[in-house]
Image: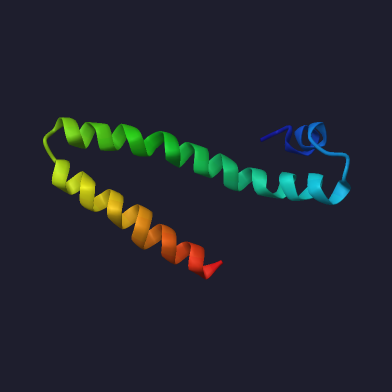
Length: 73
């Protein structure tokens, strides 16, 4: 995150693309953190015998929240 303005130039020479990459880095960091937490919590819930609950949460998160947030963009 600290080097987001430097790392983007490793992939492109374009100023506009490098700025876009730098602007999207905070969103990437949040996504990576949440994608690390979700499998752990799902695994814990499955281990506790809450398979049906995990299935409903996954459907709700991926389809209801994910698709509706995509439509808002």
